[in-house]
Amino acid sequence: MVVRTGEQYQFTLTFHTDKRSQASLESRQPGATVIPIIVSTDKTQLTVFGGKQAYPVYVTIGNIAKGTRRKLSRGAHMVVGYIPITKLERIGNKASCCHALTNLFHGCMEILLGPLASHVVMLQFGPELRFGPEPG
Amino acid sequence: MVDSLPGRPPFKCEDVNIGNETFQFHFRDIVHCIRGIYGDPEFARDLVFAPERHYVDHERTCQVYSEMYTGDWWWSVQVSNTNLL
Image 1 (cartoon, chains in turn yellow, cyan):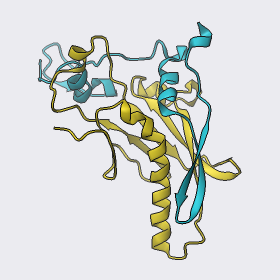
Image 2 (spheres, each protein chain N blue to C red):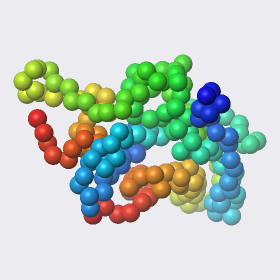
Image 3 (tube, rainbow over the protein chains, first blue to last red):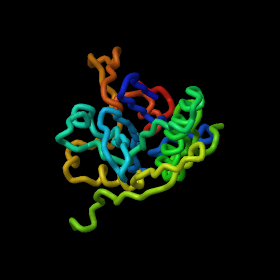
């Protein structure tokens, strides 16, 4: 998991192998390859989507070399969603407001990453969001 | 053949309820997006399908790590769990 601080966040979702089976991927599925999924957000790219301000979530894959991935002109990052921005002015308490914003982010990410649950053995995203069976 | 290639999937919308307020979340199916990138002919020459081990010498005494596919994790998942020379 790699997280950059500041306005740009990049998360590398880590796959954990099924510890109940030590057989490698190639021994179980000849010709199969790992596809590392890299999800990132960019709050500097605010846009209006659905009438409200939102910032994009991108997805790319680790099978493409980083030099190519980083070039905007190559288009290796695909927009996969737009997380809405809100000031949540109805919530007066600042701590509750921050908590609500966090819940909004995680609520959106849970919807976004949900389809991956059936494609991975184990998916971990920080200490809170987990999919798939527990290892071992 | 071009029509059968995966492209960019359409956006969907779901409501997210936070503290009595409802937000619209616009998103695409992430698996279709990944298929779209993986199946894009633009990256046909750039895709890596197998991990690699890079060394600075022929004796393989010093391993070099750069791209994700040169890391130990990818090698252990796709090739072998044991540390082979």
